[in-house]
Image 1 (spheres, rainbow, N blue to C red):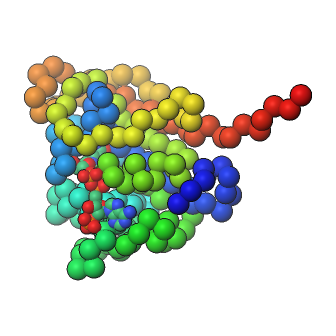
Image 2: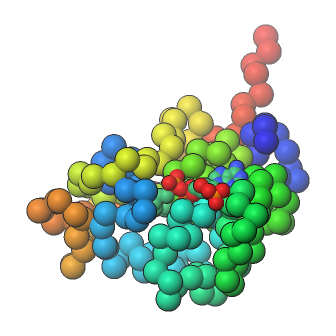
Amino acid sequence: MSGSPSEDSSAPHLRMVWAQARDRVIGTGDGMPWHVPEDMKHFVQVTRGNTVLMGRATWESLTPKFRPLPGRRNIVLSRDPDFTPEGAEVARTLDEAVDMVGEGADVLGGGSIYAALHDMASEAIVTEFDADAIGAVRAPELSPAQWRAAETSEWETSESGHIDGWDGPVRYRFIRYERIENQTPMVD
Ligand SMILES: NC(=O)c1ccc[n+]([C@@H]2O[C@H](COP(=O)([O-])OP(=O)(O)OC[C@H]3O[C@@H](n4cnc5c(N)ncnc54)[C@H](OP(=O)(O)O)[C@@H]3O)[C@@H](O)[C@H]2O)c1
């Protein structure tokens, strides 16, 4: 698992999708400390019809009614040979997962999977909440040297969303990041 996606034209298109509060908090370990319907709607719109790839903990954090995520090909990463999720395919290694996705997939986390696949991903769709949230799981840092924000929506305020422990309104925006292609070194 090495090399950037721009170095290998046969690499699948991996697009990371996540929602984060301030300090890149994405979860508590067994779930997300918020409920924001506008983000859930956005998530469905973005991922509908696609192959989605996630770690076992994220799979288990989904409400059983929405497992597998409907209308999408679900692939779950787990090293546990006894783990056989109903309605999903299983990849036992990152390489196997990348082989299985074919042309591409939406990488849905969690923290360990974003960290592992960050270097191979060429796009990220990030929901930002302008609020503090408590949680130990974080999204990877998208360094400005490697990523640029290609599209950024205006801040909006959620009608009924809430974040555990946050009393104020939940402001959110969507950002689409693209990996900056490797630049050919300048030669005098
Ligand atoms: N805010 C968001 O957008 C968002 C999105 C997704 C998840 N989350 C949150 O993130 C948290 C979960 O993240 P997490 O990092 O704790 O767990 P995770 O990444 O979802 O899953 C970890 C598990 O994936 C499997 N795994 C990881 N690397 C693997 C590899 N190289 N090969 C094979 N299997 C591999 C292992 O399963 P086995 O133990 O079975 O081997 C591992 O225990 C939850 O709180 C969830 O709510 C937030």
